[in-house]
Length: 371
Image (cartoon, rainbow, N blue to C red; front, side, top):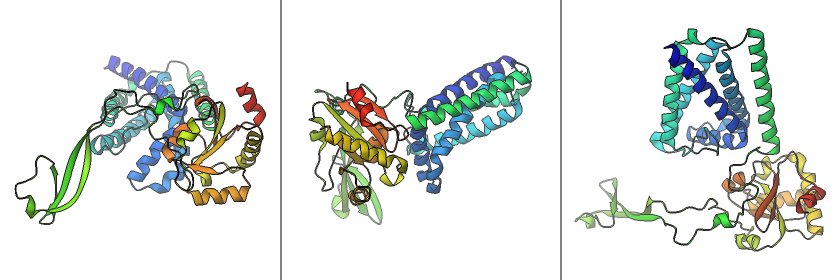
């Protein structure tokens, strides 16, 4: 029993620290996962608190992992870990059964886990944490109380600083397809000969108040007694999907400009504001100055948002901005830069650098990166 407890203590402690650090590297991305769950369970009123909650969870995971390794506050930590893992096991179990959330975000975008894999991972952790809970007496402190408390307090400070830093100045390590050095256009292409989606045609009919789905080659003999409702295509086997498959840029009238953006040679700037009404207001003056300087220097600047064209045009007029907004779905914008607003500098469709809302560059800074 003693060996099992010590093994569980080390394994769970290290795993929680790693998991916490990966999520702390991208708290905004983790908050998007929390919002997915909030919307599924009808608790959208928590959406505004998702970022703060994601930060707290990251810091707690790191601190609880460190406390477990140090042997600090064993009883309290065991209770908290047990309650936490029971909650997450139920959550990932729900995802595995329903398939409503395809990735729990346990390890951010660094390690993608399928719902079933996330659930099995939590089941293993539940067993190990339960062993720690019932074998608390075997968890001995590594150092005296003063040293252990100082080490724990230091871990809380460091993890808090790291979490706030990555939130304000973008992730320290970018695991998304829009990371520095990637060619965005190339990542939207499907290589020749790649497998395509295998689609099955389904026909929906109604009879006696009930709906039925039939395959094209399995229609019942008395199909004339059924009422046709609809026809749909069901993907049986997914084909190759490029890393960037939802990059589509349109203007206020719905005309697509994706190819126009990709056709530009040399430098260009993307100004990303996922939702204009939720962007950092203090950044507006900086965006205006940067845009004016880019336009004067002949550098194309693309302002992209998921806000409606009407609201975007109103925002441009109110703030006297020297550009028009193009529209894109919120999902690729959230992946493009973990900030609202954010700046992406590209050359020949290759990402050169990115900046968040708290360190928006001036034109002189952009010029240094261009040189």
